[in-house]
Amino acid sequence: MTRPVAIVTGGNRGIGLACVDALAAGGFDIIVADIAEAPADELKAVVDHHEAEFRYCISDISNLDSHAAVVSSALDAFHRIDCLVNNAGIASPVRGDLLHLEPANFDKVLDLNLRGTVFLTQAVVNAMLRYVGDVQRTIINVTSISAEYASPERADYCISKAGLSMWTKVLALRLAAEGIPVFEVRPGIVRTEMTASASAKYDALIANGLVPMRRWGEAHDIGDAVAALASGRMAFATGSVLNLDGGLAVPRL
Image (cartoon, rainbow, N blue to C red; front, top):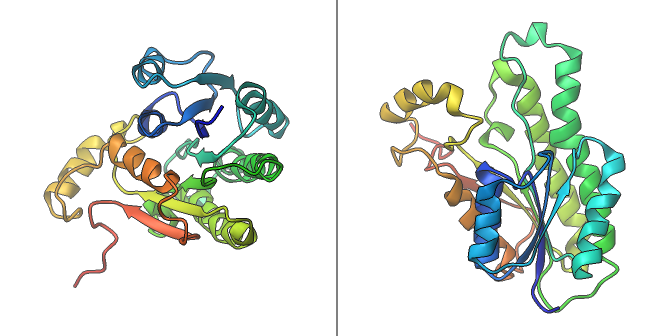
């Protein structure tokens, strides 16, 4: 098998599905690790359209014991792993005063968004290092503009994404000599199920100029960027942050 292979966590919908679409279009075979009991019809349609080989692995990555099955699913099917897209994550279960943040909610967010992602990456990288492939191997962490921009009403989410941002940096340094670049992709205000409940708020903010491009981001904006980073054409970059936010993070007077 000569096609590169990508694992996408949380690939059943939203940004993860868009990443699958773009990677499959770019010639990757795909493993999706997702908590849903079965692949969505949209996911199956995407991989069929691009004639990509595909495996689906039910996995709650906050459960570290599930990580071995994700890696085994990839290696059993394809005998290699060339790209890991760490996309799975959850929003704050409750938005509110951080002085009343519940430890259980904090743990739930950190366990998935940060702890689970870190240790799944560890398992995948150890498998990657056992195989010397003929294409660029890449790790891509999908964080958020909230890794830098603070929202006190959802402190748990912001902390998880800031931690994942640092994970990108330390992992990039560790893997630089191995020739495996590590990238951080920071979506801004993107139209997904996660943002649907606050769509009226964001519509108004965008209309008033918060986003210089004056539009929502769409899931494919993120997927297309992830596929570009995974292509191997940016092999001298690592530890880099790519803001996909319509200019929101550009400092302004």
